[in-house]
Length: 97
Image (tube, rainbow, N blue to C red; front, side, top):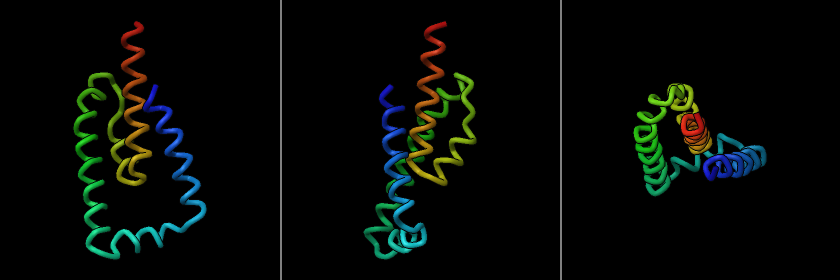
């Protein structure tokens, strides 16, 4: 599963970056100029579109949506990739049955 591999790699990379840096510095950098703010909002829009796109399939497969929506809001792509991976896994289980 490509999404699972992406989730593992991105989560590992994010963990390393967070452990080496500090979250407060990231927040300051994110809102330090108009370009950074634009990139932040662009990522929020992209994540929202992805959540809206995946949610109907998740609901149909019985995958809980709220925990992943909260995770995406808190940790961004790590939460979104976990959600997509769970949906793909549920879909593969349905096909196998």
